Length: 452
Image (cartoon, rainbow, N blue to C red):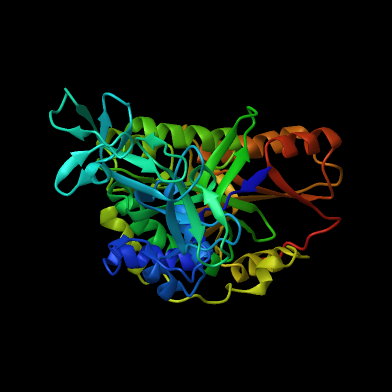
């Protein structure tokens, strides 16, 4: 079972923005005050480049920040009227006791005799300090009066206080809102995460060309796929390419590892381990900048094709890679595999892009020489496929011993794609064994054996 997970940078508009940032056209995305915007601010560089709304811009930037592709920093705080959403607000300073806005700020004096306190300008009378309450003249500080410091005084209720209450008056809808209930929106600036640059450079361009290459060869391509393995564990693959040519089903697991140093053996082993658990035999690992020597040797042993920085671009630019998208090679690859004779069988394989060798011999890993009825080979540019084909014709159902010998021969030759043409059929026991060993079986009542 496979599940495809889509990432934000796979969106066309997001990719366009990231490409501009990689090229340095946009270095940092900063919000700008915009009272016409629903948010109160805009990202002009993003809006103009992608022709999107402010809300859409924020959604894109936030999704990229969550993925760690962009680094966001606090830039400013914008206040909105909770009634109408307007940013056209004016602060109003009020008395915390009675709510009046008739307050004054200044140095406050207290007459020590009558305890009257007020701002200094109320005590001033013809250049002298005179208590407004008892009319007594004040001469000496700390004897006649004292200074309480710079405070606020309310002319409505005479309250003296340190800080006024702040309320916000909306100039659009005229509503008054206390400070604690005003709507606040934090705005952030966004810049490219330097640690993601190399990885992103692959994701935006080379990866797109690689996907195009696979699709042009008839593969169905899925990205960021999760596949459940035989152990029950779920494994993540960057790319899974599937192609059913009517004979065998090909699955290619492609991993992408972008690091600041050569890929370790542990990483390559981990990739090989999850392909084994999921039963995927064709493996490609893109390692940027490259792999360590011991990891390279292990990959070769496990038949993992490695594409490093030094050979990735040449591979993408080589003649086997189409510069532009083209239609899949032929619709014939999607029709059922059908033949009535050996010559039709070979012709059908050739039409599907396979090179054919008949009655050939292969030296196995054991040193034994094996006779092969038909060996079909196809080079897809990224993976070379070999299909071993045996033709068994008897006057009764073919038993398990013949199927076992064929499977053993294929194993010794290191060939995993196996096709058995059984005339007239297999016994039930042989059929179950073939299914377990992933041998594709074609049963036919007759088969003409003339060779081309």
